Image 1 (cartoon, rainbow, N blue to C red):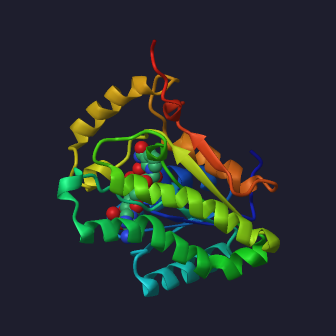
Image 2: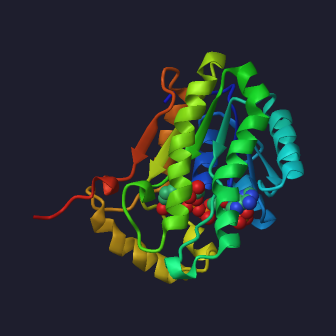
Length: 253
Ligand SMILES: NC(=O)c1ccc[n+]([C@@H]2O[C@H](COP(=O)([O-])OP(=O)(O)OC[C@H]3O[C@@H](n4cnc5c(N)ncnc54)[C@H](OP(=O)(O)O)[C@@H]3O)[C@@H](O)[C@H]2O)c1
């Protein structure tokens, strides 16, 4: 991967997990990165670890005025915008009989609507730079995890809207792609109150053999795919599965 000294990248949810790994990876490649999230302590830690090429903004992507400030600061920090990485996301997993409408609306707002709106709001800058948008889907669109229909539905929406937005924005030289990861250690299930940190690690080791490559992935391995999609000038509408083969659903027969 060549270094992109001129790249300015906005990464939502950059205070942990895949967003954090992507911010660190792209900054190492020479990009100026802006990260956001709602918890300042996490953003300060990541920003300090990266150094001056990283700017952080405490912002809730569900709020229009906070997205506006986020975008403005990202453009100022990066002197323009070359890529928007919509990594912020939440998990909502319950049996169908316990499904709560407000929680369902909330997860769609964060996982789907906020990223779509931020894409719209970034468009002027992305048209200028002939830049790109990367969404993060999930292996949940290919493997059924019990009780995870709310989360899986948001990720199905992400894969579909990636393709339609790619069709719509091609004429402006703006590319839209999506990375679909397998299991990666992060805070998402812990923040959702589903597992403790220890239970999460235990669950990950139980999931490892389900991947044909026999292990879970790292945030850096997802970042490599995101970096590829930012640079891949003839790729738009791609759903890149970076999941150690978990989506293959291998059956030992
Ligand atoms: N880890 C996996 O195995 C896996 C697999 C497939 C796909 N994914 C996807 O990868 C993406 C990153 O998730 P992750 O696993 O890295 O989890 P994570 O560590 O929990 O990261 C998600 C980040 O999003 C931020 N966030 C949530 N709601 C937000 C909001 N309203 N405004 C701004 N920031 C918000 C969170 O920070 P605050 O709470 O501080 O705001 C958090 O730092 C998600 O889209 C997830 O669905 C993850």
